[in-house]
Structure formats: C-alpha cells, structure tokens
Length: 258
Image (cartoon, rainbow, N blue to C red):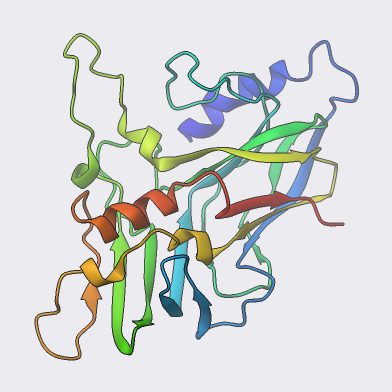
C-alpha cells in the first residue's frame, strides 16, 4: 500500500538518535462519544437546533500520530505533516459514531515509543492521493427541530471530483492537492504508543453540526421526505457540515486507554 511505503521511512527515522524509541504494535479502535447509546442521540446546537441522530457513520481510512506541532502559517506542505510520524493505522474502518463501544480496526497499528503531540484522521476509502474516490465518507440521517418546526434530514458526503480545488496559480498546480481535503489535521493529542497498548479515536457528533443552519437546507421533493445536504461546496448547511467533518478541534479525540 502506498501509505505504508511512504510513512515507513519516517517511522524508522524516529528510531534514530532518540531514547525509548523501540518499534511497537498496538490495537486501534474508534467509537462515538461516551454518552451515546445508538439511534436517537439528541443534542442542541449553539444555533438553537435540537438534533436527533438516527444514523452517523464515518469511513476512516487511517490514523497517524506525529511528534511535531506544525507552525501556524508555516510553509506550504504536501499530504503529510512536517516532522516525524510515530504511529500509523493503515487499515480502514467504517465507524458507527452513535455507539460508545470501541470498534476495532481490522489490523494492528505500528509505531515507535515516542511522544505524539498531534494526530491525523484520514477520510478515504482507498489511496489518499486518488484523483477519484466514490466512497461515502459521512453517512448521516436524523431529525431537527426549532421554534415548533420539525423535519428529517440526511447527508452522504464524498471527497472526489465534486470537491477538487481550483488551480489558482497555474505555476503551482499541486498547491491545493485533493488529498489535503481528506486529511483532518493537526488534531491536538499527547500520548506515547506502547507495545500491546491501544489507541482509541472518539468521534463527537455535536461539534460536527455546531454551525449548520438547517433552515437553509433545500426543500424536499415531496412532503415528509428528508431535506438533503448537497455533496458539494454549495449552500451554508452543506459547507458548514463539511467544515465540521474536517475540523481538527472538537470532533476527533485520541486517547490511549489501559
């Protein structure tokens, strides 16, 4: 796999000139928030909408931990953070983010015994640099209410040709690669991988919907049908939900439970 080929040298580099940097393997998991209990997970957003989720699934393509904290406004980067990756989970998992129970990734993660300060969540169903990826990365549905009005909604988001960034400077065609949209980073963390330990990613739906103005969703084709988010950068609700999906603060949290 291209991810393993690209990142393995970085992991090996982390073993040189450091203390306690032996290679380790660990189990990896993902889950919804601790207070979730399946369909019907309900919360109120800062805009005053009461949201009840019947479904929220995320396709996670990989997890990565880094020793470095990128400098705000620093140099333009490619699809990988500067610094040294100290842990990786390269096999994907479709996560039910309404379940608090940890769901195991299909293969163990690997890394070095070094302190990680930032993390990445890769949202992809295949290669991170694929020019086209039809995988549904966010699949959600539920109902929303405010001021006495209640209606159903649903969304299925992909990151493919529908979100390909425009080339602003023809002399720098790779300045906004599509893969950057598929990588949520840098997620603040502070943990050290350990042999036979565990890595847990918690996904919190509440900040995902925090800035969504549901009333601006397009009207449904027939009465009672759900209002649909658009799978493209158009309209406040769809833009805000996609921004939430890619937010490095609040939605995703790494931990290393015993």
